[in-house]
Length: 286
View 1 (cartoon, rainbow, N blue to C red):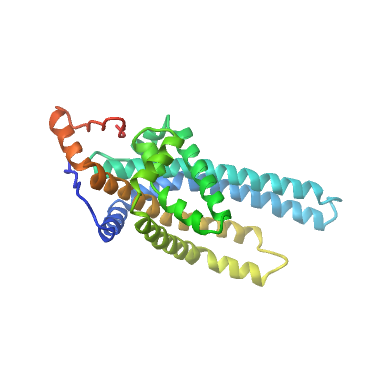
View 2: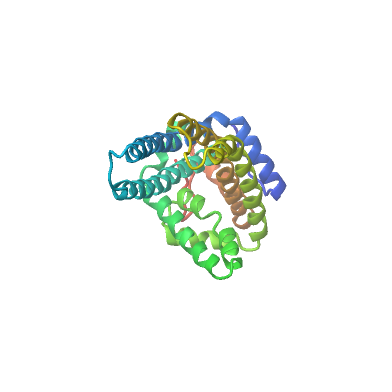
């Protein structure tokens, strides 16, 4: 089993390790994220098929009132939002556990990462939801407070998962860990946002251009499916990067502020098996 390389890292080293982990374990992270995004892809194709057939029926006069179509579209959009929130939250949690296992030198697999999410679904969704509420309130207050909260709450989800704590505690924990490191968090957000936007745009822009050229008719169903497939590939490829970066930053902050490297070493020496002893008050994934 590889030995965990636990040491304080600069921001550049965190980013370098992020991309090395992503490159070395690409199929692991892509496999983890493919499950939630594949489910969303299938659902989006179903919504597109329903919208296309109903719009054609409306134009042919087979449907007299567009009210039902509008209501169904609104309901479908709401359901997509809920599914996206739940499924991507689960995918993020599984990615965090995968990064943790790699970072601590444990065996890692797609199945094992998802198995660790069981029992933590409400924690990850609650933490994401509370973080979004806090950041939303901050953005309402002249943008800057929202950016500050976004940076200070950046490791709330890794803390919730890796320490087995509930959302309110996870937010406070992130605020403590990121104190004096908000600028580094902002730079990670900025760099990963640009990367994710560039990758997803590479896959989706051709279809956006075609849709604009065909307005107001829109794309035929076949091209809509291809657009959804391109979006699926872009999301699977790009989505893990930010989660990997903040998971590594979570451990980096613990090493810097709490001596987690020494704690982990002592736990390994005192444990006859290869498992890692959890920190006092913080349960690491088994």
